[in-house]
Amino acid sequence: MENTQSAAPGAQNGKSGYEVEQGLTAIVFPGMGPCNFADVGRYMVLDRYARRRLAAADEALGYSVLQRFRGTDHEYSEATQIAFLVNSVALADRAVDAMGLDPDLCVGPSFGQKAAAAFVDSLPFGDVVRMTAELARCEEEFFTAEYSDVITQSFVRTPEERTKEILAEMEARGEWYEISGYLDHDFYFVSVRESSLDFFKQRIRDAGGYSMYSMRPPVHARAFSALRRKVEEEVFARYDIGAPRIPVIADQNGTTVADAEAMRTMLLDTFDRPINWPDVVSALRRGGVTDLWFTGADNLFHRLDCTTRNFRVTAVTPKTALRPEK
Image (cartoon, rainbow, N blue to C red; front, side, top):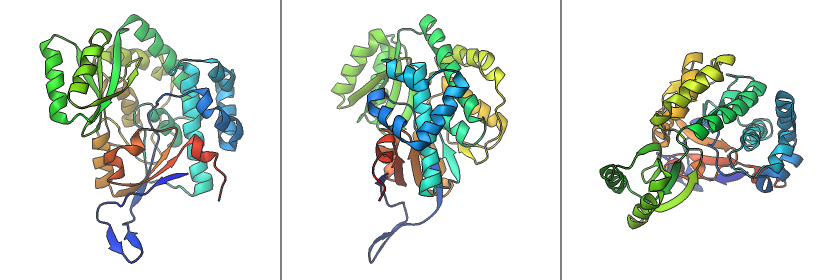
């Protein structure tokens, strides 16, 4: 278990350190980052929670997820996405069963929505696995035909005003772009044409910023409304999405999702609405949350400044799950 302690606002200094206010707890299923068998394969083979979820995924799909995952070199292939989902839910199983987690709310930014849907029982785990595989195929088909030259670029250390200036330059040059994610006060996802990427990254460097990684297929842009309609008609129509057993905070705007229709809308919004993590943080703080548990292979959300400034953070990852228990 990786435990990053951050005193919540209102904490008071006591005799033996900080006496931190105790409020509600939220579980967070992180968005999907680069994932490969070399990093998580050992965890999936050895961890009892992962093996159980992996067996359920194999049954749902009719093939060995581990075997296909081992054989792929694509960071966002169908098998890679299923493996990331399996691991996120298995780590939540560990947190609940072995570590005493009993969350009051749930969040699933970006790809994490899928694991969240399983955790809050809006869909059975097997259905989430099948839906994830079908969505991966649907997206691959869409982006082969449409927006095949679009990349979502993540970058950090670029304040809001400088980011606006860079985007204004893009617009003045006639370059297409869309903001796909607001991660922190100086951290964004922006989707651009591949032909614009070098210029865009250079302007980020000129502003003192740092380009992180490029995502293909791209994500969370209003231009992808046709993808939203495609998945709604071809995939979502076959699944009965129910109300969550605990409230979910929508990653697009921080609203509370408490019924089946709102859950379905949130899952569809991920295709053509940007994520807004600061809005989620604000909603959690207003709701009295002081503790966040991240379950999944996350190198991003649990480390963001707006996360660590506002919550006590516990990260349960494939790496920490394999550490000897004390």
